Amino acid sequence: MTKTVILTDEHLDQGTAKTAHGLLRHSEKYEIVGVIDSKFAGKRTDEVLSRCKPVKIYPDLPSVLDEKDVENLIVGVATVGGYLPENFKEHIEEAVENGLDIISGLHYFLSEDEQLKEMAEEHGVELKDIRKSPPLEELHYFQNRKEEIDALTIPFLGTDSSVGKRTALLETYKALKKRDNKVEWVATGQTGLLQGADYGLPLDSIEGDYMVGELEHQIWRAWEENEPDFILIEGQGSISHPAYVCGSRAILSASQPDGVVLQHDPARPYRHYKEDELHWPMPELDTEIELIKKFSGSDVIAITLNPVDLTEEEKEKYIIKYEQQYHVPSADALEDPGKIANRIEVQDSLN
Image (cartoon, rainbow, N blue to C red):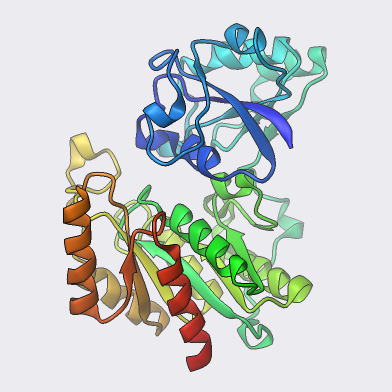
């Protein structure tokens, strides 16, 4: 794994830093040796975030280089609209000057920034924009290949964006693998690709005509190359989200699911989208479950919780409530992924 520093300056404790959060919890490609964030310099990441790898936080790149060998810098934020925060440019330029490759998952493509492009050429480094769509001629139309796939396809959807869908998926993925199941997962966003998914695409960068077909192709590849028992698909946004509906709709169409795991934050009052301005209320679970059934014909087979703003007692009450109300298992996937893995294994016997 290549030694990597993550840039989150002034964002580490916010939802915009979900790329950093994901990499600090699970990374198969990069060894995270530090985080650059002037707001939390001197602390460790586990003092700012829950349940993550403890990594030292530095005020700037020179402080990192004084102590660590570093090969890459990853832009660790996923901003609304995919813009590059103004205070990041100086850090990136400094990294280029020090010979680091830069990896970004933003819609703002660093490789098309003329100043950065010139600097990168001068210093012999790469600007890697992983959210760039493949060339049009490499994309695939929808071909209805579900019948060719003899594996259960299970999307992990959510009631909101940045609610923990990918984390719930990865914990369940690891739990299934520990039981000697053959399982693959398909990333649909930049963080999952950075974490090391063998299959996937930046779904929100794909031309509309190809979104479903290209994701279907990635799911089919996971089956064709490995013949797993289960294929887990990362969710995006929410099927009822006013701003981020396209991802969930495409995921349901591409995967034609055998069951859906639904991630929810019961303490979150507003959608994670300009919540200070718009105050879009979170949906009721009933509404989300009904929409998923309507669009896919599939049932929600488990409900996972994001408990970040819940006490342990509150979390347990919600788990009991959801299990009694919806007659499916419910769990905090970071603590009890085995419960969700059990349900997926049961689903295999039912299909």
